[in-house]
Length: 259
Image 1: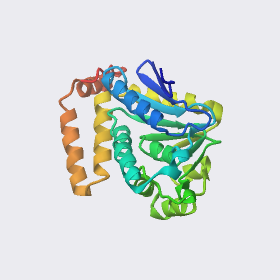
Image 2: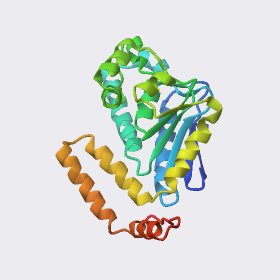
Image 3: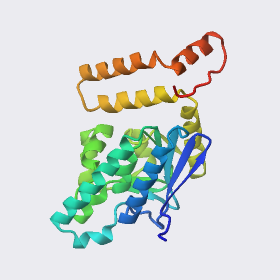
């Protein structure tokens, strides 16, 4: 029986996924396979899970890919590896529920690419983030050259990728790469508070918001406004929308059921 490298638990309507490949949690082949399987399992439980929190065990979130395998990589093998990895990043990015990344330590290379596929990023004050692939003669291959500029702008993204330098959590906050920075002992508390806050909102509306935002990033403003209008109109026919409006008028807390 293979070791559990990706674990998860469910607390109420929030799932917590932990990447556990000590000491630095590199995304090896086995980790990727278990990560993929875990996402599938969580997706099958989407009626009970409203928010997913992802973190790492120990001193790293994910400190990169499995560099020990790089010297043997051929161009053909590299293309095959990316053909497998790319859909996994997209699967996380398109996961139907909101995903919060709790960055507990080193978040480098594939780790940062993974974090950028999440909807919200909360970092420990001791976290360090970066795309250091240039230092081993490579560029980011899991979406770093595409997602990083979209988050922080092309100039900052180029500086990070060209130099391979790590940045602090505070710097990441200042450039918009993370949403919040908290002390290490407060990281999971902060992530869970946000997760539970979101989990208390109407899940069907949260999903619609995520879809509208994600789709809108890759199309024109005019097209994006049409996506938004379609989602807004759809929500007007849901039970949760009626409940929310009635609760507001009656000055009571709404009870959302996801329909």
